Length: 431
Image (cartoon, rainbow, N blue to C red; front, side):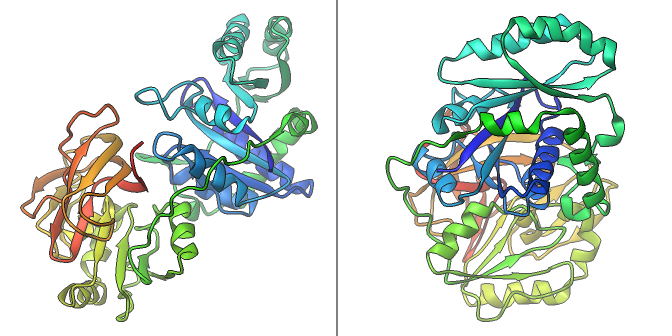
């Protein structure tokens, strides 16, 4: 099994992504084959990982995936070293599961703890010591200090950290130039960051100059092997038309891998380029993304819409997730209050003029057959968007609960062979 480690922080915004990307690119420069992973349900960070490491990054989600599936994903992608970027703080999960620490414990990978020390000195050492002692099944290999103001600031932290006996792998300065551009769902997508290669090189330069990469590499440990084989995730069809462009980019790589392993053919097309799904497709999948930023272009994409209608008339399964679900609806009202007509295959109408955050894991049971599976199947997903529903009226697709088992408003929709949900599909079965 591949030796690996987990890059974690004590909160969101601590510098995990900065360190992870710089470390991946720096190790690649040393000739290492680096396999990237991301803890939890995230689309944006893995896209950056893939560019930095030159390999697809896979989500490892201990809330929605069985231990067998997590371990199997690691085993399927051997490399010289694996690096998994954590989510939120090291011990922050949902309903007692899904924390970065759970992933580290499951795989037996040590943690490289990133500490944002702006405005701190000795307290940083206390936080590191607390994280190291909090769970016996989680090993903190060492610390990287982020946003260090200078040599004097570092000198005030080092003696206290030495008393914890945790290795200090290095530090990064308080340099705003290392930050990546962001928008409301997180970082601006990797494909939209024109100078991404230069930015990644700058991160690798910074990490190489002030972090002991060799020590970090020596701290990696082989992953624990899977005890059993995971249940396969069935593809929605044999020939799957997958919308793929700047408006539709949120698809989990492990799903595509599972579908291909089952013999499915993935055919990408671009709604923004007004491409229609192939006429001989036997399933269409519209992922999430940022359709609200491209609503005008999508409203003018007649070949795309006509292609969807032709396939729906032949009862071909068509499924949309989040943004894809909204595009299957009647219309989208953008942040400026302008309405744009969409495909009209569902009665859904959504608006970004009145932003409301919808966030969290979802446990859903299918009320009818659809591209997600057969009636009665339990599917697991994650919802994260700012759209408001201003009209609906189709048959509910799912009975849905949150991570704590409480009912939520998300019910999805189904009309004929067309279906959609606000949550992004992660896996099947009980969490």
